[in-house]
Length: 374
Image 1 (cartoon, rainbow, N blue to C red):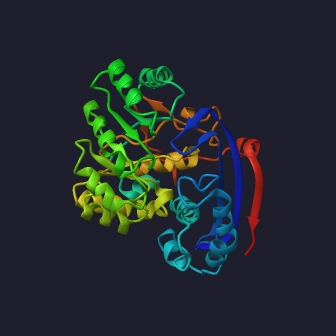
Image 2: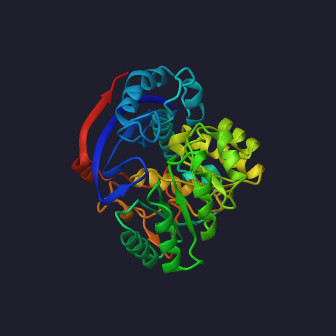
Image 3: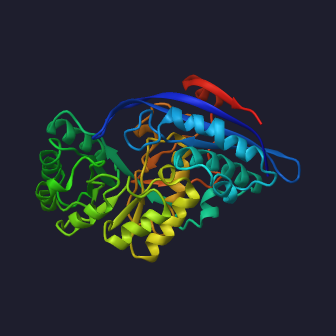
């Protein structure tokens, strides 16, 4: 394939309710979609879509939205325009000179992959080797203003039928909220917590108190660089530790497993540089007997569809953050938004990622369009 054009659609989409983590509160989803046109061998021009998941500030990772867009326009696009025979599998190779910026790379690789699969008439699930037609749908619940609000929020998602609840926590908003959820919904509720690196090893005794609640896991309790300290903490907890921010590549996944820092890994394709690297991490973890699950970054229907296919691989044995589009958006930007039913989300079967961008909705939420020249 030959890359002919690349366009970035910057979006600002209102959330149905504020989403609070240990480091920020979001009321809108800001992101950009990458629209890439590629010419294939028979002369046809095929369009593919990718989604950039960087936050608008460098709180979750060093990469942030405007910087990521700049890297795509100034560095990634020129390198790929210069390639005469481009495939999704070689995008990473052609971008090897660019240090870091995994979310920028992932968004462009995603668009190329979508176009490639559409040209072949093949679904992303088939390409990956997915083994499930539907995946269990978990939901992420942000930090609430009170314990009572937490119980109400969790109750709403339990009533909707979600297969697993994940609760965001931070110091001062942890034990009482977790205890209240367990009291209200019982020990049979699949329940886990996510700290987003809000604690330090000094908090080990406090975190040990979470062992009383039968959690599936505690996600990223310590800083992203603290693999050694996560391994130390793991020896002091009965609750399995899951790493998120610390796993940025297949290499870092190997390190985390070897050190005993991770019993479980949350795989977010944007964080690790793309879906091909995400599949490598899945394969490595599975070979080592480490469970993985698919995390979310409040994706639109484009990224949500791709995540659903990834979560259908055999090593994804825990429910991921694969909620329906309506968990975050009253109005998604794809023609057929992702829906949760009976605790699951169906794996898309259409060509590429299996969803179509709704141009009218895209324009409704678009704040800027950037055309990147050859």
